[in-house]
Picture 1: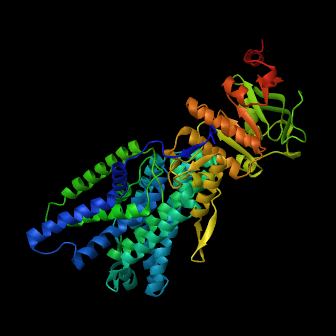
Picture 2 (picture 1 turned 90 degrees about the horizontal axis):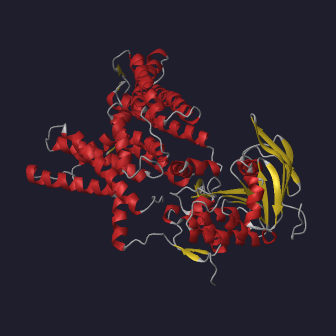
Picture 3 (picture 1 turned 90 degrees about the vertical axis):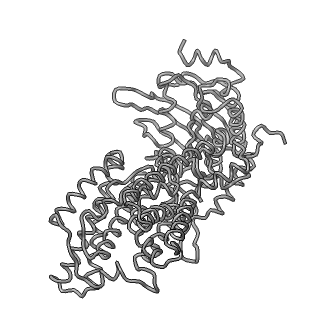
Amino acid sequence: MTSIASSSIEPRQTISPGQKLLLRIAELRAWLFLILLIIFFEVWARIAYGNSFILNGYNLQSISVFATAPLLLALGQTFVIISAGIDLSLGFVMGLASVVAAHTANYALTTLGLPPFAAMLVGILSSVVLAFVPGLVNGWLIAYLRVPPFIGTLGMYGVARGAAYLFAGGMTVAVTNDWFSAIGNNRILGVPVLVILTAIACLIMHYLLSQTRFGQHTYAMGASQVAARRAGINIRGLTMKIYLLSAIMGGVAGALYTGRFSAGAPQAGEPLLLDSIAAVVIGGASLFGGSGNIAGTIAGALVIAVIQYGLVYIDVQPFWQFIAVGAVIIVSVLVDQTQRRYLGGRQVE
Amino acid sequence: MSDHSNTGAPILAVTDASKTFGAVQALTKVSLNVFPGEVVALAGDNGAGKSTLIKAISGVYQLDEGEILLDGRKVSFSSPQEGRENGIETIYQDLALADNLSIGANIFLGREPMKLAFGFLPVIDRAKMAEAAKATMEQLDFHVTRLDAPVAAFSGGQRQAVAIGRAIFWNARLVIMDEPTAALGVPEQRKVISLIQSLKRAGKGIIFISHNLRDIFEVADRIVVFRRGENAGERKPDETSSDEIVRLMVGK
């Protein structure tokens, strides 16, 4: 058989086992960062305090609770970034949702006279439903009016921020509801409820991203919007869904914040927006779109949480956190670019 | 109309197609037939109407006048999806593939097969996609060794094979190839030409657009020349020359 077309489909560059190993390491860089950080703090804690950093229930719990809010935002942001977009409004959508959850839970308890559990559900549901508004408007601006995601969601950042402060009357809104506070602070079999809920959210998002057409089309759109459209994918509908999902995660994060602190705060998610983007990027996604996954994002969020908690734990001035997280982001992007040079794109599961 | 070697009804019959964009008359009473197992090359200068015609056939544009018969049935597609559902696949020069997805995922893009996990949870059936990718690519004489690799890892010609594989897998009746070799190096162009020959053997109707007259002469059964949105002539490759085709294209 010597047909002209006859050939084996092999990757065009032959990759040596060594390079293959490097690529594998690059794929899993977030987990590698995480392990290195844990080793660093472990060694420090042993030398300085004579005890373990990681084999310490209190530390583990603190880090995992600490990671929940940025991780919830990062889960939505993962879809947005894979689609080659960005959602800058997410932090204040969370703040707005937090205020709305506080107000509606209070209203349901005192004015409507609902029992605390029902009032809490009203609070959580309203914050999630409210998140539909910024989510759908973001999606509409980007999908139908062709506003670049950076600009559209930056506009929504301002709108959500203003709305959150107006709803809150410029202050935090206290909530007195034992059920709500239990969601944010109690434990089941020693595991914080917040961590359990976030883990469930991770599983659902992993399923959506890796096992459904919605997830598959998000990857395709991020790699080439033209290719996705030519394949018959409804890009507008998909864009709406992606930004809606992102805002819903902002709504969930806002409601859980209200539970954790027994108060709704407009600025609840302000410092978390950049953390959410950082978690996704450290987790192996490219800001150019088309790559990333939920496991990476989880690792990215844990890296940030370990840095932030660990530096406080070893009594370093808290401002070092920003420098450390910033450095990890830069290293991560450099690894991504180097890897791209080796292999034109990245593989998804 | 010159006679053709194929007997039977054409897969595609376009009659008196006209299309204007504002003041611009893009197509004027253009006609085109494509028979099973036939490669029809469209030749013409830029703005001759080749692109407008294939977009009208695939469903991107709708004609102002004239009719399109697909397997003898009058059709007017409102979108490329509808055209695709009716067996018209278009292959582009710039490789309409998602580089980050596997061959199978690209063949199935937008039409992914689903299965139930644990008896209730719908998930994408990746095993089925990989299997179909392997079988389809083997039909094209490409032997895939890494079914999970993203198509970015393959060369331009191999990726064009994936696009052609998509047309084969979905059992397209008519394959429109818009400059399929333009983005490729010479050896890769050869491969695509031989892929077109396999499509032909499979009995598909093929519309082939190229600026490369050598490719046209090698692969086409008929050459239909357009000039300023009108039919300017039709020749068989073995009864004409490049010079004559160029004369028809420029109208001298």
